[in-house]
Structure formats: structure tokens, C-alpha cells
Length: 399
Image (tube, rainbow, N blue to C red):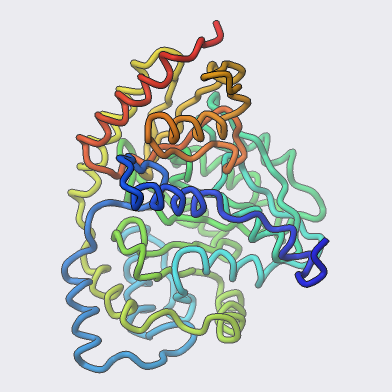
């Protein structure tokens, strides 16, 4: 073991999605014709009002430190957004802004978890959840969810996973990587389990909240107001406002949790970029609904095409901008004498042979699936489908 590093850091796995995206960009730089469906990033532009607000902040010299929790105007704007869009009332001092969408979640686990606590985590999950939980000293308790429930955790599975050590439950809707969205009835069933556990927090990751295609997004505290005092909502500007590089996220939480997170953050990152905060205020004034309509068309194109390829099946995602097709019928087959042992091998060969970059489901706790981002132009989706089919037709699928 490398004694120069802490065991805590040595036990952390690097982000598979970030590593793959870096490799993909390197291949593109080398001149290879890569279709990048691996990155969790929208291809559309931020609202012009947000960009202009950021520029104006620079011109006006509004570039100094802000309070660790963020500008009062931003926190007020977020509180109004949550009331208008989600029907949930928060005071501005219950809102803490942070540097990007990852930081709020990291802050939450650090604020509420002690060594040996357990956090119930449905699988498939976003790649950073388990590592962030472990960094807090807690233990992720994985609840495997499959296609029979649209990759969503049932109340029965949740109840079975809860123990005396459970500190929190993570609910992600819409989900990354599956695109699954919990319906109001499904959240009610989850809430009915959790209402009897007075000491368990609910971490509601709503980073894709506006990207819901065939239903509507609902927050758990809206359905169960009595759970609001134990629910911590995390969200940000990266996905729905296409502001990934601006690095701006936030939490909405009970006051004692919000104050603790502000204190923790003051010693970690401090406030997020002041310029980004002014841009965020402008972005909240209006979400571009045309983004949802455009991504719905791309979803239909990709999922429809995938289900036409022999050996692949793909459930229709109701949210986010990912498809999560099952490629299990190709596991165990060979390509040019190389055996496909799991989705990771499948993705490696797909990238090497057909220049399509996809994320293996193993990064999300699921060995039989791959994640494809459909937030790319439609002509690239069509070309990617051709390349995927060219690849799979060379494999002898299992009957």
C-alpha cells in the first residue's frame, strides 16, 4: 500500500464517466471520428440572459467573494423557483449554493453522516454516490432495482434495506443513468415507509427536474409535507440550464442542516463563483421548455432505433437525457477473439471498433446495460445507431 496516501483516498474509485470522457476527447483530438454519447452534458446553450448576466457581472466588477452560502439574491431566487415550480416553501436561509452539482451532495453526506452509518442507495446509481458516502465514513447499502420496476426502488425493497444504522435514503428522480422518474403514487408509497422512521433523512437529488417527458416531476415534500423537515433537496444549473461549466448547484434543507452545510462549506470551497451566481439568478427567470421538446424527439429516435437492433432491448426513459439499453445477450460472445465478459468490455470494443463512446453499466452498479446520452444532434444519433448495429451484427447473440 502507498503510505504516502490516506486509506480513505486509496479506497476511492475515480469517476468512470469523467475518465471515459477524457479518453474520448483525446481520441477526438487525435483526429478520430468519435460519436461521444458518454458525457452527461446537454449540447444546447445556456440561456442568453444568464450569459449576459455573467458578462455584466464582470463588467461591473462584481467578482469578489460572497458569503459562503451564496448571494442573498440567488438564494431568494431559488426559494421562489422551488415554490413556483415544486409547490414547496423554503426560506432563503434554508438554501445553500455550492460549486456545481456534486458539491451539494458531498456537503450533505459530510454534514449528516458519522462513521458506520448506513445510506440506502438504489442501483443503478450515479457514479459518485457510493464514493461520496464512503468519504463521509458511512456505508452505502445498495438496493438493486431492475427493469421489472423500471429501475425504481419499491417500498418493499426500501423497508428491507432499513436497519438501526440507517441515516439516509437517496432518491434520484429523474434518474441518472436510467432516465426513470418516480410517479406521484410511487413517491407516496416510498413516503409511507419513511414516515415511520423519524431519524432517517431523505436526500432527493432533482438535478434533472425539468427534463420529464411523459409525466410531471414531483418532489417528495410536496406529497408528504410532514417529511420536509427530514428531506434535503439537491439541485443545480448544470443540466436543465445547460450550465455545466459554470459550476453552480444548491441544496434546500431544514434550517439546522443548511446552517451546518454553510459552515462546512466555508472551510472547504467557500462560495461558488460570484459570476456564476449572477448568471444563475438570470437563468431562474425562465426555463426554455423547447429544450424538453427537442430532447423528447431525440429520445424517441434513439430508443426506437435501439429496439430495432437484434439483441438489444431498451426501456423508454421518462426523464433526464439518457437511454440505458440492455446488452446482456452479447455478454459471453466474442469479437475478433476477444471475449465480452460484461458491459465494460462491450463499450471498450464499441469505442475501439466503431468509434461510439458509451458508458458501461458497471460504473452505475449494473453489468448488463450501457448508458447512451441522447443530448447530441439527431444526425449523430442516427449515425451512432448504424455503428452500434454494425458492431452487434458481428457478434453471435445468445438465444
